Length: 335
Image (tube, rainbow, N blue to C red; front, side):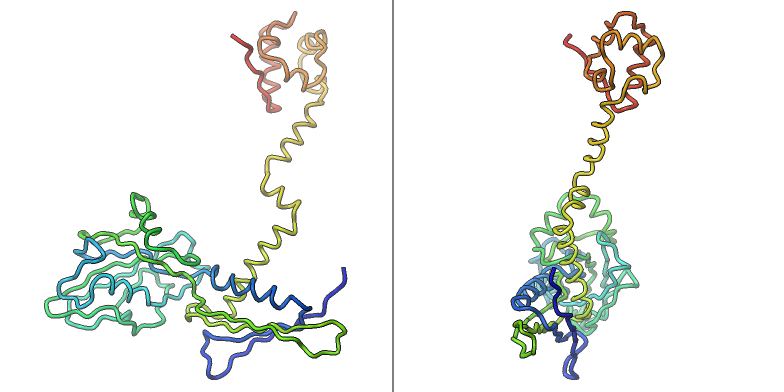
C-alpha cells in the first residue's frame, strides 16, 4: 500500500478565546480527506460526546409541571428551564454510566436562589456557572426540590425520560428521594457538552505533485469538557467503529462465540469408541451393531441403544453417561 504524507496537527487558542473554545488544523491531507474527516468528526462531536444532564426533578408539594408554587415567583416550567441551564462538570472515570447524581435545594428565606445554593450529593461533581438564576422566593415562600442527573449522549426528550420513570420501581428506589409529597417530573436532557463545531477545507500550495488540503476545525464547548478532550473522545469513538469494520474475522469471533465450540464438536464426532474409556462388554455390544464412532452412537435413540443385544443396564448407563460428557444426549423414540 502506497504511504501517505505524514500529518501535522496544531491546536491554537488566542487570548480572546476561553478554555472552552479552540481551533485546530490537520495537514497535509490528500485530496478529499478534508471533507471525509471533517464531516465524521463534526457529527461525532455534536452527537456522541458524553455529558451530565438533568432528567428528572421532584419538588415538595408539586404534582405536575404546570403548577404554580406558593411564594415562588417562577412556575415549575420556568424553574426546570433554569435548572437545565446549570453546567455540571464531572470526571467520566469517577462516575459510572448507570450512576444517578442527586442535587438538593432547600431555601426558606426570602431571597434570590442561584446554582450556588445547590447541594450535590457527590463530591466529584462541580458546578461551573454558580451565578445561574434558579428562583425568586417571596415572603412566606419556601422551596425544597431534588434534581436528578445522569451521564449520557445526545438529546433525550421529556417523553422518553417519562417512560423511563413510569413504573420503574428499581430506578425510583435508586433516586433515594427524601421528599414525601411531590411527583417525579421528567425533563428534557441535553447531554452534549459541545455547543458548536465548524470545519473548513482549503487547498495547500505545496511542492508535492499531488493536490493536498488542510482541515481547520473551530470547536466550542459549554466549559464542562475541554475541546481537546472532546476531540480525543470523538476520535476514539470513530476508531472503535473502524476497527470492527476492518477486523472482519475478529468481529465474527466476537459476535458468534459459539462457532469454535461447534467446530470442536464436529471434530469430536469422529472419535473412535475405543478412545471413550468404555468397558469391554459395552465396546463389544456396540461393535456388533456396527457403531464404531462417537457420532454413530450419538445418532441412536435411547430405545435403540437399550434394545442392543447383550447390553445390560449397567453398560447402557455407562454409554449414556459417557455421551453426556461429550455434550450429547440420546433422544427418546416415539412412544
